[in-house]
Each structure stands twice: as structure tokens, then as C-alpha cells.
Length: 552
Image (cartoon, rainbow, N blue to C red; front, side, top):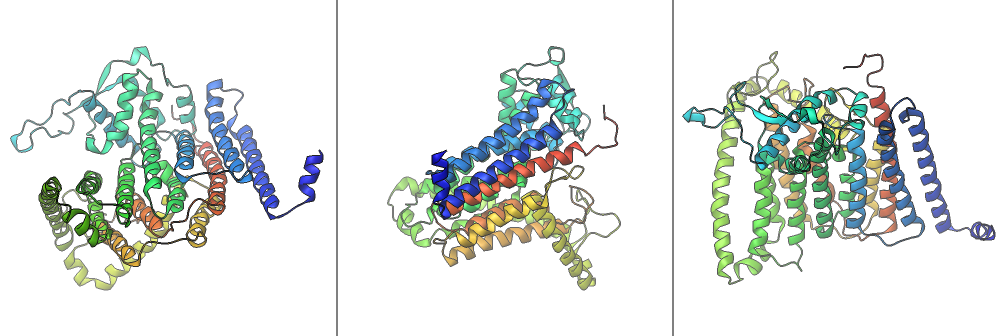
């Protein structure tokens, strides 16, 4: 008691700050527990059902206590280690709060990832085309691949069934599997490119080899995508010379957490764009020596981006942010024959890949912009396709149409990138506005008030040019159709295309400041906002089907 009295008798700013941190942590934990007992606990349900939600809140409370302890005791911390801990905790919570099949196009992504797992296990597709002009291609309603019966028959029960999804998953087989549903069934759904799902496919493969049940298989694929975020984030925070705090905050936005905790292959697009941006910044430092094999790594990042979204190949412009002097002194004058050989091979590969990209974009633009072409492009049937001739005849109308779309796009994309709205268009789970504003404020405050050196202005121009060219290419492509794949809304650019651009832009605007109390305080505030974000998501999803009968 005397120690408590002496602590409060000599009050100062530091003690006031510590008390404030403790009070905020306590209030958040109490609010989370009240929400848990009022909304999540169901005394008529099974222990597994209640444990499903209890685990979410235990993780959230543990993260809050840990961060509060760091601040109150003024402990040493580092961005990479803290990010690993935070990312593991929050991706885990996001996966349970927003379970499988809740993400954009996640049904198709799940089937495609499972198909990729089949390839890893040596299981072939069947009834592929024997036509010599398209040998081995998929034939609609004839070609098929195999899925385990349990994984195929249980998946539809998760599709738009909130809040019943939680009961299905909580009672599902994580480790044990259903003995009567182990036979393979034929699946006639055409999968997407397997190369896009190497990470999630590896997770499904591991779960199948271990004999996991349906819930274990479907979560393991998502978990591997989350692991990829954690590993990539750790390496980026080790190498980034600037913008560590900005990346930390951005990567823990609800929208980014959800994409990287789902089956979406946008996870690979985001993280390899991050890898390319990070390496360009890292190799641009005077003390870092550039070698030919480093250029192979940079080229590899670009090559991996191409099968995901070919437009990201334009990010290769960022490589020129590495000073030209380093290319001459570190590579050209190295006098190592094998480096010259590697560069020759890379140069030849660049010519081949560049030619293919230019030809593809040339024909796409010519076919869909400069003359009308309806092949395979989804358009609003109530309007003509936007062509060059249409633009010349309706200049003001087309420009106004584009400008209105840009305004809609901006707010739509901010909503989804930060995470105000999460999930596919039939779901659009809502996060409280206050949480989104707080997290955006943490990002902006960090950019302004965390002082330090920034990248050179000419490097900002190079990075900005790469982003601008990419946005223009995306915009031109999306303007050829008025109805995007996500739904019949008036949206021209999908938010998933822009996540890598916004992320790298925020990193590039950051400083080289080391870990400090202001940075940790902003991370702590975001953590509190994430607690209330998860609660608001759960509340929305619990009441999504109010007044509607059970779907099964």
C-alpha cells in the first residue's frame, strides 16, 4: 500500500503516461469481455462452439497485455520481432472471425488451391482436351479433378451462412476426419493457374498428408498464406532502410489482414511487390554492395508477379532507384566472368519477357480500346464498350464518366484496403468507422511526427513513376468494361489491385527512424482499435441473417 501511495505522490508525465496506458488496456479488455459474454457465449451450445470464440478473445487480450507491458516498463523492442508476434496473433484472430469462403472469390480460390495440392501430390486432371490446337486444356463440363469427399461436400455449408459458419467449423474435424467421406469425388469446376496458389496449396497438401479433417484442411491452406505474410514482413523489416513503421501499421490493417488470411492469390501479389520494393531500397544504400545474383533476386520478384497480375511487371521500373553508379562500380567493374554470364542470360530473358508483355498489352489495348471487341470482356450490356471511336465522338461525356468513376473508386478502395468493408460483395462485413479513422490516424501521424532521414527526391520520382504507370495501366484495362468481376457496382478498379501500390507508397514516405516510444504507442493504439474492429465484425456477422431461416 505504501508503494502505491509513494508512486502517486510524485506524479510526472512519465507516470501519467504509464497510468494512461494501463487504463486504456484495462478498459479495452473489460469491453472485450463484456462483448464476449453478451454476444459470443451460448450456454445451449457445445463447449467447442464457446471455445472457438474464447480463443479469439484470449489472443487479443494477451497481445494487449504484452504491448502495455512494453510501454509501461519501457522495455527494448524491435520491429521484426514485434511484427512476428502481432501478425501471428491478428491473422489467427482474423481467420476465426472471418472464416473460409468469406473473402472475395474465395470459393474459386479454394478449389484452385486444392487443385494445386493435387499437382503437388502427383494427382492428374482427367478428360482434358485432345484437340491438337489446345492440347491438355480444360474442357467445360468434361474435364475434372479429384477432391476428398469430406472436403467437397462440407464446403458449401460455409458459403454465406453466417452465423452458422461458426458452428460448422467449431464442430468440424480439425485433426480427426470423417471416415465415411474419404472417397474421392469428381469436381468439374475449372481451376485457376496453379502457380498462383503455391503457398496455400502447400498448406492443403500438408494437412492432407497428416490426415486432417475438413476444418483442418481448409484452415491450413489459409494459415500458410498468413505464414507467408509473417515471413515476408519479418525479412522486409530487417532490410528496409526507411518506412518500417508505415509497413508495420499498413500490414495490420483489417483489409490487408483479411486478404493475407484468405485463399486469395493477391497475397502473393502484395508480398512479392513488397519484396521488390524492399530490395530496391536496400540495394540503393551506399554501404550495400550489388552483385549479379542480387539482380537475379530482383528479376525473380518481377517474374513471380507476372502470373498473378501481369500489370505488376511494370514495377520493374523501381530497379532504376538503385543508383547507376552502383551498377558500374559493383557489377560492371567486378571483373568476374560468371557475373557477366549471368547478366547476359538476364538480358536475354528480359528481352523475351518484355516482348511478350508488350505484344500482349498491345493487342489487349488495341482490341478493347481502339476498336470494339467483345471477346471474353465482361461489359454492361446497356452501354457500348468504351472504344477510341466512342471517345472521339463523346469526349466530355467519357471524361465525366471516368472522373465520376475515379471519385467512386477512391472511397471504395480506401474502405476496402483499410478494412471498413471486408469480404466478398454478398457479405461486405462492416468494421466500425471509429476504428478505421484511428488506424489511418496512426499511419499518418507516424509519417509526420516520427522524424528521420527520407529517401532521396529522385528516388521518390522513380518509385512514384512506377506506381503511376501501373495505376494508368490498371485504369486503361478496367475502363474497357463497366461491370467488374466483383459485382454490378460502378467501380472501375478493384481495391485488390491497389493494395501493393498504397503499401509501397506509404513505406516510401517513411523515415529511417529507429524504434522509439512514439512508434510503439501508435502500434499500441492500433492494437486497441483492432480489438474493437474484431468485435464490430462479430456483431455484424452475428446479426447478418436476423429474421432469415437457417440455410440448412
